[in-house]
Image (cartoon, rainbow, N blue to C red):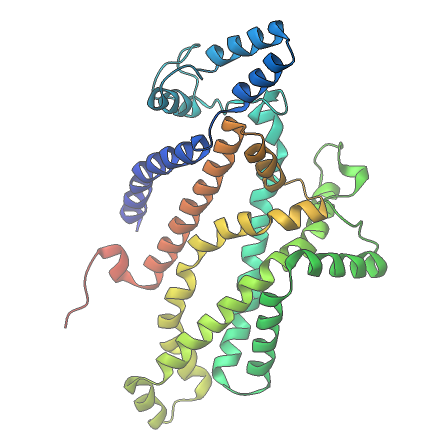
Length: 341
């Protein structure tokens, strides 16, 4: 198992390099950049001193270099104006919109975004696994009908509207502050158990809202996989031998149907980041989503590139976790063996 995990981690390195290059290409696709746009605006206003300063900044941040060289400097493969100071060296870049390093702009947003996404994935599986199992055990029953109804509601209602409704009830019933991931009293306070508890209380509503649509899809997927598995001859033969339905369902069919269910972890994490952008803006959540929108609008290359790379790292981490769980469920995955015909 350890050897398989090491192989998967090593395979992530070239994938991450390729993804970082594609991200840099996408960020650089719009014509111009932040400094060029600012320079043209200052020149049109006749401010030569400001334009000269922006030209100096272009040289400082290697905007006057060719495209491939700029990428290599940003990634840390090639020395820039200040030597090797790219992502490999722990330098995230400079944000021109906020006029400070990217690490200071994001700050706690990275950790809070990861925490929100992990909580959302946990809620997705906490809802989808038991509901999908019960729906498959009695297809067409009350649980199956209720699960289908909730799934369709979660997919059809806009997430930001559902968030506002739930937060209104949470504020009226439990006194939870509307918006944000913590109460105003804890925003500038140092981290403590009380602050962690307050963040956990505020995480419940956003995690539930973001997870509801994905949970509906996962419920239908697990139900379909289980119903397909229990119709196979080995299950029919086991039922004929008098094995109880509960044991019959959880013995082998659930294990086999659970594999594609687990494999979706790699797809859930990035979709949570992209799907939570509007919810984060509406609920004023301190995540990377709103910052990404402003960075893309302002062509802030380093800030937008790092956030997209962070999303890619979440994707690869989710795929690694799903592969390790699949390897634990099915030894053929980690041993690289094919089923014998």
